[in-house]
Image 1 (cartoon, one colour):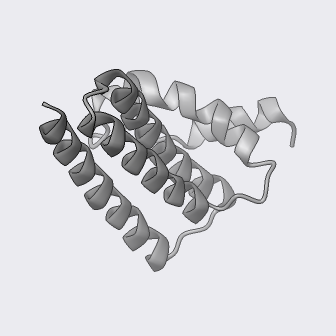
Image 2 (cartoon, rainbow, N blue to C red):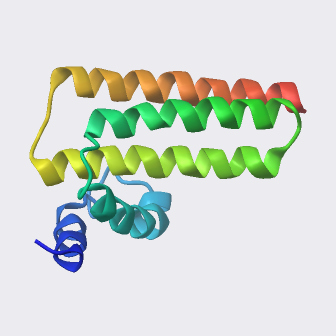
Length: 124
């Protein structure tokens, strides 16, 4: 399967029409993440590794926010959201799912989102 076919496959498996999908995902994130996910699918990166990258973006965003650099903090937050989308798309693309992956994703969400809010509070 070549790159274009993978992007089409990823777009077809996205959950944009789900009632649980938010407007940001529906109109923005999915169009950025699908081409990146197609590139990543050619590498040995697993969905859990993509989830791990959420911690990188979250901690980096926390640092930027806490020092008052809201532009770079915001970009890290966008990177965090895209990394979150990529991990789900990779899991669907590979057809893999695990209880560990589900809990790891929730842990990444709870910790990084909390860090972002704390960082904004410290920066203000």
